[in-house]
Image (cartoon, rainbow, N blue to C red; front, side, top):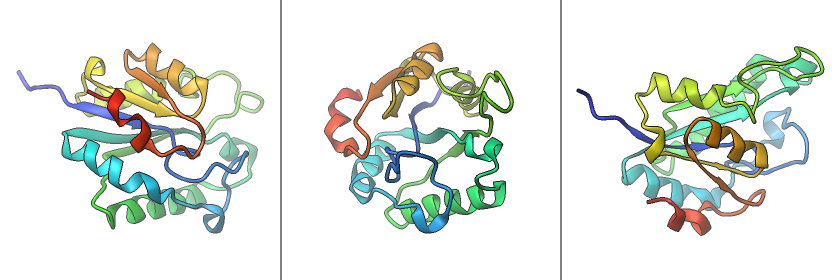
Length: 164
């Protein structure tokens, strides 16, 4: 039987890039948090898959397009890759409850994490979700993953000791 992977799921805005208080809609407003290059590289070197799980309700609202989101995510991957960090996957929920209604993927629901767990053969008991909102921790708990709450734009290095 194949051994399961362990992962650190990461919220995007306020964790990997600067929190703007609302949706990041344009590439020129997308500022990567450079203080997280080294701690994420350490986690990766310790055998953790790094997977992004982000609500992107601005798509439903029409504030930006799938193409603009793809451009921001490519910039995120490229910038971290320059520092030896690879994201195994990026999952996002395009829905907003006022437009689409209820979905299974918008955090605090665990759909994005469950999809990552399934697609990448992940053991939730060995995995974590770092986010800057209570809904991130809640989604992690519902998926069987340990949630770690940080402040927006807080260096992940400050919580590395919480990850075994």
